[in-house]
Image (cartoon, rainbow, N blue to C red):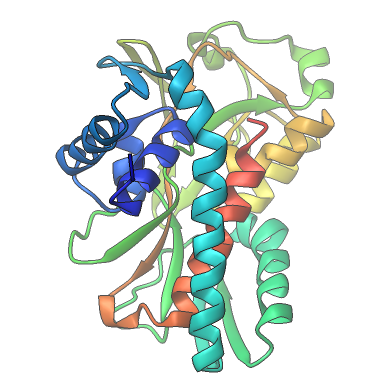
Length: 303
């Protein structure tokens, strides 16, 4: 049986990688209903179930596990061939002004952008690093990399890592001095390192465990409007932080920070590439988005 739609195959691969059909739909900019229809169509064409789905979980069948590696290879080969065709017709040459978040920008995105320019040397970049949200309508910014759900539904948001979440963490030195909290409620007796955005202090930390949800008011002797500083304070042992998983993935892997209350999930903070209008999605921006998406998924793989 031939697979008629490569889009359906992409839905299957993304759902398998993310462990969620709804997350795959968000990443592919589809409605959940369209994603579900595509997966059902693929299963009907192959004549076998590929995934066992419930409202809360998804897992591959034996047939799905057999298909996944081949599907990945097929899609990767198609992307590579498409890129060769596109770049064979035109030179990727563009001047882009990009707004980046402080911590991820300094410690990861700068290196990934270096890789991109090494491959496409006729692309020039002008970067703005700040945790203040750039106004892509009024400021001289072509695209922005942002965390969180976008309040402005008129913006174009392309997911880079839809499943990113905040993670509660502290340095071994801090925990040795002050003990390790076992539940989020115990944060009230700890020094918490808060992030400030404008006049708003983020001192209400939200956690979920299954159907449970709690919101904890925290306090501490340090706060900053730069996420990189908050991470550095945490590594130095000055307190407990609640940071984006992408920001601290290498610190967790190296043992500089320890994940706390691992049975509780922090707030969802998806990372997206933002622009004001779909006409700004030039071949350069499309290639850049794909490059950054792969790097983000690789960085988050150990979380």
